[in-house]
Image (cartoon, rainbow, N blue to C red):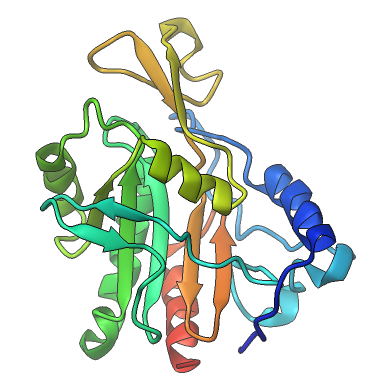
Length: 242
């Protein structure tokens, strides 16, 4: 499905912000006793300017209309090279996630699901799906630590060092809650959906949303409950739109 690109008006952007802030609440790491997958998030019916496509789009993720652009931000990857989030090949599907290696559940589960989805694609198109993970905990996630963690799931995953003004600007451009650290309280670990620091007395709160950008200016969000098979189906459909 192709979505036409158009400039967002101020009213559009305000409406998008309100809807996304409801959808993209900062969840951090979910409790280990969280319920099983609840299915793909449903679109918001009757929203202004058709900001969310109806569920008959055929996608498992929520299609944003008007689409959100890729963040106009460059970060360093685990090799120290510059990675421009907005300057990607036009035929690439990019899955973007903000997380950290000490996250106990949402982050590793999401990585495992995206890795399985990518492996299920035909070998000829796997390199057209790029998974990008921005760590929001650079104090513990050195480039070496982040690289080792990502390699457990897929050696082709791109790791970027965030937790700085540039990554926070990227989160804001996506109308997402900005990741942040706060003093740790072990007794509140599961109740507040945050990840307690392994070293250092602080916790990190972050959104658990996967942002997917595809050809033809398409953008989708996944806020939980998406299976690897559903990701694979959506990636395939986005690639077919090239």
